[in-house]
Amino acid sequence: MEPRYAENIIVGVKDDQKFKWYITDKDIWIMDIYKYERAYQQAGYIINLDFILSLRNNIAILNENNYKQYLSFYNNCVITTQELKKKVMDRQYCETVLELRPSLYIDFLNKKLYSLYPESIPFEKYVPDGWEGKYENFQRLLDVENQYWINEGDLIDKIFQEEKARFKGGKI
Image (tube, rainbow, N blue to C red; front, side, top):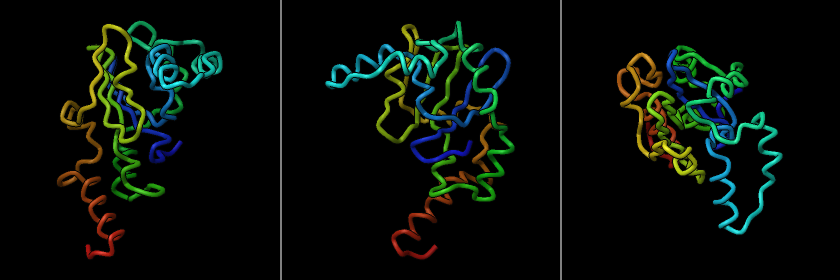
């Protein structure tokens, strides 16, 4: 699976074993489906919870107790830091380099979710009870060896500035 802006996202996951990057559909990272359902109902919508649960192997709340089982369904979505770095360096993306920016960081040890997701799903609001969810730049929290976008500065930001200049008809 390839990252696609606002569709498939890059998520960093820290647990008791090690840190991993995933590229997956964005919806699998809604940690508490019941909170998500309530938000939809308050907005006047009805969602098919049975269908959503079937896509999640009937795990309604992803938390520190069941994440290993949940993540085992997505082993084929793991991507190494080196593979991500190569994508940035070689500019391997579909429409914008922002597809390669990490969207979420989930720390199962400390029960925290950080979101940089630029669109309308507030992942940080759908964390399990007892968890902390924040919309905040989490990149500084990652070990340097996992910061695949760093190459003499933030390469994603540099490429994005070039994209913006090109879009506006400016010079690079």
